[in-house]
Length: 149
Image (cartoon, rainbow, N blue to C red):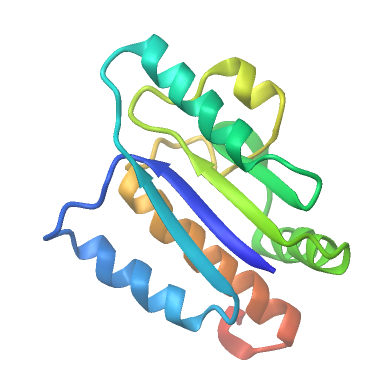
């Protein structure tokens, strides 16, 4: 099982979020790939970019999950159960897609599973850190590791 996080926009070189992201990436026992995609200014370019990213990464051995504030809001235990099901079904990769400042096109959200970190709006760079921490937490829960307590 591998994880791929595709995110519109890039970490600035001096961002403190990079260090936090890397700290959790080291703790995850599976490969975690971060793909940062340049943000396009025009909405139509963003839609085409998003659609191309989704199409390029879609197949039966991969699960694509959109992070969207209107997605399903689940707690850490449910997220760990969700990942356990994907691991047991032998998915080769779980792909998380984080949109840019203009969000993700509604047709892409409707055609994929979407999860939420709540109704609040979070900085896109911080969402990457929150996501990798939740992946680590979910795997710790599955292993019975005390990190979650």
